[in-house]
Image 1 (cartoon, rainbow, N blue to C red):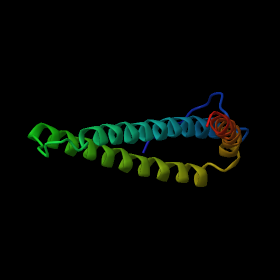
Image 2: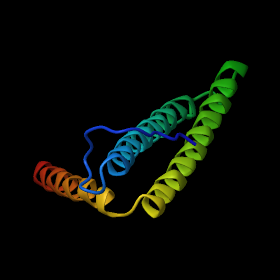
Image 3: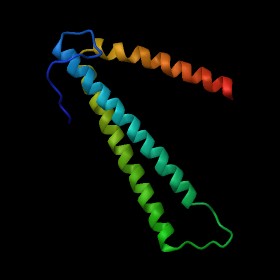
Length: 122
């Protein structure tokens, strides 16, 4: 697990260095979540492209290898995502909820704005 310590300016309004370290760790973990989700989506997209049904139902070994490789990468990214979620839960439990809630509120507003924008576009 990644342990970050030290003092510094953070997002939380908790108790100094502990809140700042927790906020930095949370930011790092959220970036890892976004990267893992991006990897899963990217590999799934490539997997679907490789798995398209062609008129002649022939699969060469390169296509089969690509499918296996993309599927393995999806599994690795999903496993990494589960580990990050576990770390986020531990951070929430051990560092207090105040610093985490300070970051969650703006994210909720951001996601609601994105949802409204996508509703208007569609």
